[in-house]
Length: 128
Image 1: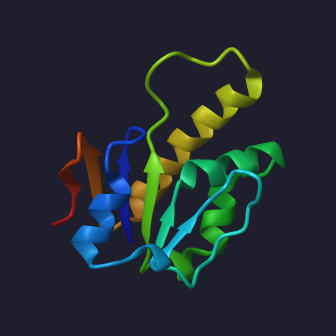
Image 2: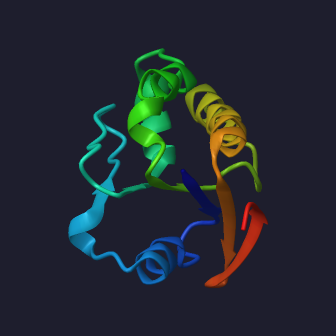
């Protein structure tokens, strides 16, 4: 598994498609309204929205990730790092922020490679 993290609109998806020779048809975009994941796609984009859907349903997203570990091992997972900045006043948004961070720790431990993209520039922080 490859985990690509970074702030919003920092070029994570463009980097993943270019680096791994993939196209838009290879990307599943999480929408935040559903916990569904399309494991037929190579890239799972906006994982933070999947986490939000889990939080709204009072489900620990790490358990969902573990349930599907066999289907995620060959995927590229892209997630916004929403842990920095102003702490939200809304309780659900605070829980979402915390669970996204916890999921990134969980995924980072399982990933073969972790890449942080900032200003379109990739930095490998785990793996080669």
